[in-house]
Image 1 (cartoon, one colour):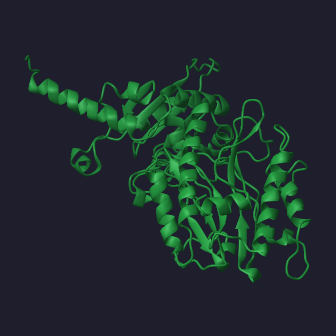
Image 2 (cartoon, one colour):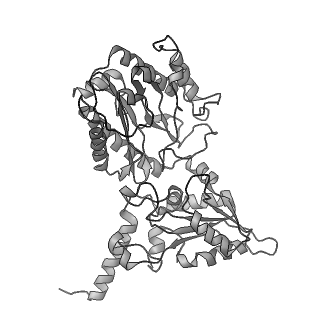
Image 3 (cartoon, one colour):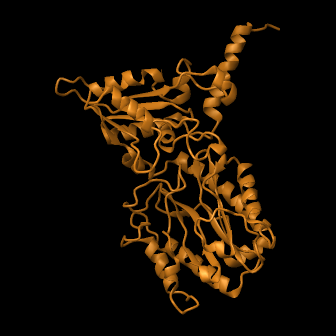
Length: 448
């Protein structure tokens, strides 16, 4: 048998390893999808965009390993930490400035072979396959970024659109921007988030496929919880079980801190201790879902711990479910919104239903116990940024989640499902497979 020279074999193995790392860590969309987003952003800003990736020691979810910045991933599909991108829109010649074609560059940090023994192989700009792997027209070493920024800024208005930190909200661009500001005091930096939020409001087919996988895995986890919820079981066991169930279906991490709140804690919206022993006669609110390849789902169910709702629990449960169904029935693509103050608000539909059905122990309407919004966008973030001023339409993915929380009765009920609007304007319930009617919940808990 003919044998390859060792040097060629070694190079092939290394190249294969680097390619695998760059392409298979996540269920990634085709390069063309990310390229289309970069071009769409370039048309909106009509200028130069510079965006920085997260680094490996940043972010609140280090326990689950490195997670790329949402906006950076949306535009690049790259999970390489410490990288950056530059996008420059095409410009016609004017005022003695030559015409400029659309340009895009991905900047990768220099490889640290010692560090890679701990973190695994990284993709470097010196790899001739880097443009093909990443889908960028050009891939350069990070050291070239200041030179390229200066070159593009000189050829246009000295304005750079980037991820400017807002208030207490962190941004991976903060430190690098300080460096660029010192290099060129004439460059003005403007926020790019509003344009990105507008683009992210509508999901493409690839994004919806990933959201569906997150939803399906999370639905399976809720089915497991239906079987496991019983008196004298700790809330933490349910949380751990669900993370195992969606994890074995491909979710790399939780989409948010799981909420498993029983008794009084069913009325606490963001309860996350999950450390009480569930008691017979109480309900438990389970708001928990996984994240699949960066895309989140968000599902909530309320279960009777002993498998059967009391008459009062059933009354409140049915009102919450009725409010959700009323909002679904009222939905009109291109008209309905999630905003409270909108004349076509689905929130108002749900609120009015709750406020006209049932009373508290003092004979007062229940609207006062619906204390949060009706829904939010989902996507790369469980509360995905988006334009809430525009009506809900094709390609939008969001939750509908009415709830009633009565601390005096130790009774909280929330029912939350994930939806999207298809190309024809139809409202599609992504989490349809998970029972929501009270009798179906009880039947599923009984294993029937």
